[in-house]
Length: 367
Image (tube, rainbow, N blue to C red; front, side, top):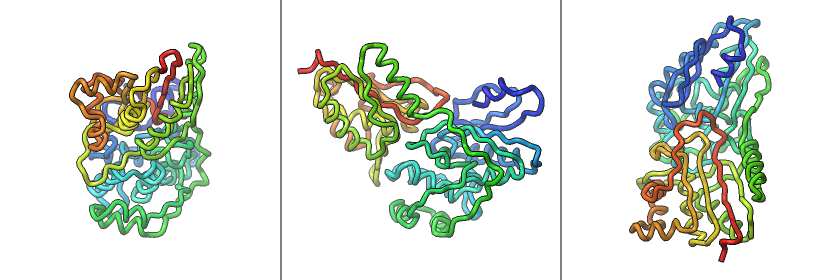
């Protein structure tokens, strides 16, 4: 996004800073690119946030701020609110990632304990005009939730008492106190409405066009599907069994995985979805599945975007001495699928419109 702005902008009067996950940086001549931690923020996330905030401070009414926002920004820029440390935010973020909360709830928490999110970056830029272009990884494309809304005041109504209860005693006390405090108003009358320029809906439409070109009927189930990954998988397995094809069931959104207190294995929400779907299909012939995160990383410990599976996946797992049910119980879907050679490894894709799932059904193979 920053490179595109550089190409389009006149040579003069352009400067700035962007923060991206490690490995996602591109060379820019006038915009400084900083790499930082994701999905858990680190010291470089703090340094990036401080530099970005300094970049928009002390501007005048004739200045223009162009904010480029995409999913992942919640971690790559991290500036704790007063009284909260980086370590507090890191602990909170890890608890959120394992909680099973949807992305709106997680980002609402991140906003409330931040000095830069929830519209506070835009507030620091006043009285300069702020224009935001966003790539959405949020089901429903709610602009204030993308990257926890650095240029968009939060409008989410969240029961923070419930959040505190679910996150449990490991939640740092300063975070507990701030979540219990009244919301802080953020001035935003100098901020233009956010323009969302890429979405899961657009990605699904493009995939549907490809399917049609190959004589496969596309059926879009939705671009904002949420819920526990294995439960969504069971529902989609039934949908697959109810269709005769040739067709492909396409869906986007963001499922969740509730880890609990047990130690999780390798994998992410897409590999867990896929393995649960494979188990539910029980080797049904003629059904192939792809599930992946469009940013190229499904879970911070996997090194893959997601995985693929076919009618033979269960049998290949059993022949290899692997137990799919045990892998699901230990949230270790990634290890099993890696052993089968079924992971999708793309590296950084440099975009993020959330998860993409495709279930291909071919009638001549069914039986």
